[in-house]
Length: 428
Image (cartoon, rainbow, N blue to C red; front, side, top):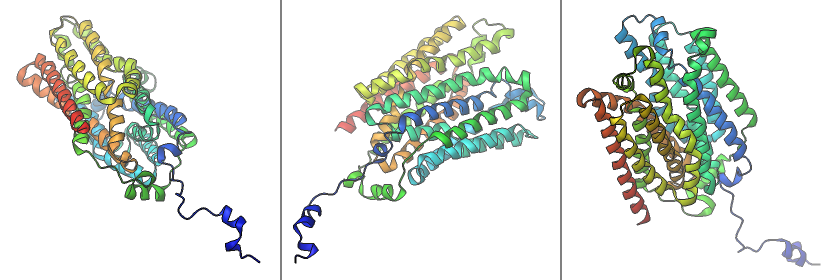
């Protein structure tokens, strides 16, 4: 009788010892059936969280005054510190959350951000003094960052050929939140009070947290992805990091927000110099501030799709140069509506940068480190959001208000030259 080892039937069933074993699927392939639904939830969550964070802009000085700050200069100073504290906190911790997303999964980071922000936003409504307000705004940045976590999830789950479009859609949701937030903040306090507005913001984020828990799906295997980090995806050698490209992407990401925010400290004064009366100055300034976000909403997804089709570097270089050129005419306007129109145009060209940068960042490292790289990218963006108003204010004081536009435009065009150089280094 033949033994089982020598049986012809068994020999036909057993794999050949030299036959290659099927390679495990990567993270994006494993989650291919989930990424569209996850994108919808992430867009909604980014929208609601950014509405909640930005809606305090119209009444922040009033709340600071309620908390016991008397002098006008102190109110302005503490309002600026409280507003910037969230972005500073996010810039500090975004790389950490990106690293943890690579280790424990993207969904836990979304849930952590949503729950943390819902709790902290509600606590801001019971602050007793301005120090607690600043501390809570800082904590919101340190433990929050739902939009950053969404960028990591969408940027790592979307297929390569759709990544630019998906990140563009996500960017549109975030921009819409920044646009709608101040409008909501101008209405809600009259209905439910300033403190009640913070509770409403916390409730909105709590809804996003529940939807994230219930609807976001992720297939994440820490052990398998840890082996991929050591040996590279599908058994191939791990991709060698191109630090020149990575540095250029981080600098460009910072410049996007720096350029957009550099005018913030001077915009009210600048519009006042265009003949707008004091009674309408705040409203007109708010409209002009929102125009860049409006322009970006119109083109973010379309420019992201162009990056998928024609290449991210081409879109980045073109958008940097066009945005730099769009800054210059803003120094020569004679009416506020001209400035608003140019800010819409600037937002339209600016919108192509973040989706394209995110797509290139995803490609610059191997799959197991994409969350970490996208976390650094988010940190660079928020750093630009913190540094931009400081630089714009300093230039306005020492060189004049018009110089802000010239210097920012020159920096963007120089950044375009840097991107062109990095692109050539990558191809070399």
